[in-house]
Each structure stands twice: as C-alpha cells, then as structure tokens.
Length: 475
Image (cartoon, rainbow, N blue to C red):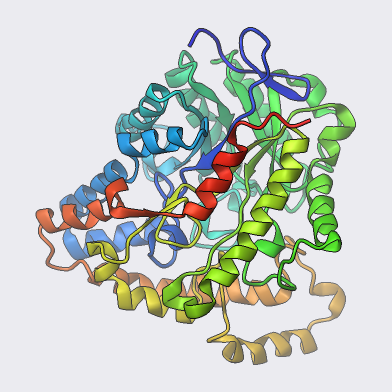
C-alpha cells in the first residue's frame, strides 16, 4: 500500500488515479452495540451498567472485552475477503474513548480493538472507514446514538459538539499515517431539526480534522438519517477530498413493506426515485456519493416459521434490484451488516450457542413485545397501542401531527419508539442482565465465544449475491 485513497470528482481513486469502487459491509453491533444486532433491550450504556450491577465491574468488563475480541477475528477477515469484498465500515461509540464524567481525557485503551481490526483488515487487503456512530449527547433521535432518549441533544449543547471535534482530532492524529483506512465518516445519521446546525458543525469538523490529517478522505452523512442534503448549499466548494454519504434503505426490504415485493416496474421505479432523491444534491454538483448503509432484513424460522423462505426470497429480490441500480452508477457501498444474531447479518450466531440458548426465552419475549425499533413486527401488540394512537390522532390537530423527523417517524411510529423501544425496553434491561447472574469468567468467556466466526451460520443467499456483484465495473 503506497498511497491514500482520494475523492476526485464523482470517483474514489488510488494514488495512480485508478478508480476504486468500495464494496463491503458495516461491522455494526461491535464497538457500537445495538439491541436488534446483539440481543439486548434498550441502549448499550444501559445494559453495560446493568451487567456491572449483576456481575461486578471486573467480570462485566471481562465479558464485554471478550465479546469485542471474538466478534471479529482473523477468520472473519479471511471470509470477508473470500467474498470479493474490499471495505468494512467500522462504527464505534465515543464512550470507548472518553467518559462523560471525565471529558476530553483520552482513554487510550479504546484503540485496542479498533487498531486490531483495522490491522486484520489490512492484512487481507480490506479497506476500513471509521464511523463515529454515537456522539456525546446523541446526534440523532434513535437508539443507536446510545443516549436513552428520543431527543438529539447533540444539537442543543455546543459542548457536545466541541467534545466530538476534540475526539476526531485525537483519532485523526492516531490514524493519519494509516493508508488502509479509506477515510473518516465523522457523524452517523444526524437528525438536526433546524437542518442548518449540521452544516455548520461539518464546517468545524472539516477544519478540525484537516488541521491534523490532510490526506484521508471524509465521508459526510446527509441530515435526517443520511437522506437530506437540501440545506448544504455551496459548502462543497470549501471542502476537498470529500464524499457524501446516503443511507439507502428500501421500504420493500422490511416487515412494514406496503406490499409484497415482486420486482414490478412500479416498485423498481419507486426504489430508484427514493435513491435518486437522496443523491440529487451531489448529482447536480458532480460530487462523489457513498452509500454507507442499505439492505433488507430477513425472516427467522423461530419467528416466521414456514413463511421464512418465501419472505427471504422477496428480500433477496429487493437486494438484487438495488444492486442493479448501484452498479449502473459505479456506486461504492457498505451493506448493513456483517454479523448479528440472525436478523440482517451476512453471518449470524447459531441458535445452538451458549448465548442464544441462555437468552432463548428472553429473545422470544423481546420479539413478542416488539421492543426493537429496527424492522419491528408489532402484530402481537398492535391492539394494545392502537387505542393510544387513535386517541392522539383524534385529539391532536392534523397539522401538528407531522413532527420531525417526519415522514421517517409518523405519529404511529413515534408512539412505538417512545412506548415500546424506550419505555418497555428500559424495563427489560435488568431481566437481560439477570440471565448472567452467577456466571464465572470461564462461563462468560464461553458465552462471548458464541459470536466467533466458527459459532456462526452463513446467510448464503445474501453472500452469493454480494459476491456476484463485488467486482462488477458497471457501465
């Protein structure tokens, strides 16, 4: 590796000016744990606190450290390379590097696993993109910003923003000479209700990183979950070596799809319109687009039973049609996600492992109560929340029902997020932690090993499609 990757016009190129199309996945659920990926309720900070209460700080830290170790090892990198994929997006939580009660004091141990995985990937010719998935105060309204609330206070308190600039200065100083890092994705899925503060913050972020690192590419997410660049204006004229990230999830890839997906002309047209709308600002200006997240979720036989295969064939059709669009545009992308407990991952933890056995009944309860917001199936509890939704619809003037981030959050989905994902999820945190009570370090190690590559099954239908598209050059 003799050169950094660079953004030139609409393309990512190597040091010789050759186009490089980055195709890969996100390592979600790892250094930024998420409930639907790893099988816990609520937010990561809540389950870490709860497990420490049950096991004590030492044993709890032992478990999470082992989890991070086993989640991605050399066999994972080798497998990823074998599929023909060349880039992994690495989401991480700021809490690995800084404590809220000890701000701006770098926790150098936070680099332990990030360095390890970056080095493993480079050994197998895999680029990495560093993604700050969780910032102080929460940069978006969802569970994966690990704030425990539905308000993105990052935008309301300048000190949260200042701390994030400080952290990226430290990260850039640490990684500025690593040429296997394709670039930095400074802030995942911002949701700024005013739409202008995110642009002002990116201006400051660009300056902070460039003061330390002049070489790595930057990948800036659009506002409202990486979908909206309408307020970015001419900011691109002041930034070099910068690409812009969309997250192109299709409604057809989820349980709430408006209809079964059959690859009709109308469905494909709707899919393309959604994609083109997200990237319109970049296309009008000849800028580089990176699709940092996308991909369907999948049915699981323990929940969907005999319908599982038919559902998943529809989801694979969504996947193929999205890739047809991307290949024509020579688009770089990172599918969500590489590994989980069975909902979306390219590989997923076997039901026979100690972790899945230990939490079998709890995971079934979580599914029944629909406490995970991502791709939720609320059919078992819909009748409980329906009267509340109707009450709100009846009592609140229609013009006041479209609160930001509408239409991503409708009134009904907002009730689900606040009542199920936050309230009910919070009440389930202790129950998850109690499953580990009395476990020895040896037992905790065995449970954490459930996430090792050899303990996982492969989603072959997904992986074959990714491999078939990994090296296509487009038109």
